[in-house]
Image: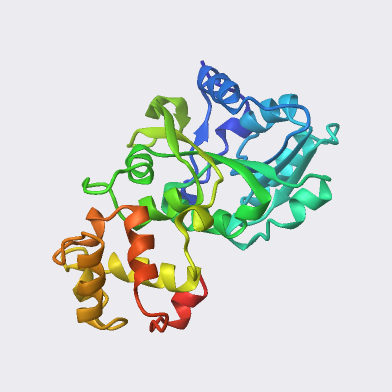
Length: 283
């Protein structure tokens, strides 16, 4: 059972957009969000407004972000008589998020998104930059990406995305969503992922986030290389091996075998002066 009408039929495949049209899946997502009247929600990829409509019925404020100008125009017409819904025609990757909580008189907001598969990682990184203003992130993503987000160290799916998401949030896959729930139908399974925002800096005792992320990114730069080899341009290999030995980490270990806590302990055990590039510093 799906949504009908000209807006639902309007599609922009070149933008990577697929629209959720299955009412049963929409309602299941709404139940999972458990929104309250005091909640303010930023929706990423509003599309034809199927989820926007249900979000507005539950939350006190909804900002619906849509990159497609034509869809955004139709959304403004559709929600013209609903003051709690604000349509924003913008690229989410270029949109500052800190003004939203203040404009609604909230300390933090919730984020829901149907993320185009090709911008999933950049979009999550953009959200994490504004983690202080976000309470929870709930997103529909490709099932394979969902598995990477929650992956454990040592698994085939574990990587930089896993470490990053698990540093900023406590992610969990809620359920899978079949291709036929979308129009046009994607060729892959999707999944709904909930990520309560809970940065781990203090819990892990990380002294310098810039150094931490510089080394974590470098650790995953070449997956076939050991941690020592990936870090040799930034740290003296002998010091790295010494720190690994003290922490009980195999000196031949690769990045995908280390937990978030092990990364934090290892970085903290290294000298304060670490070489990292401006691009990594701009994280």
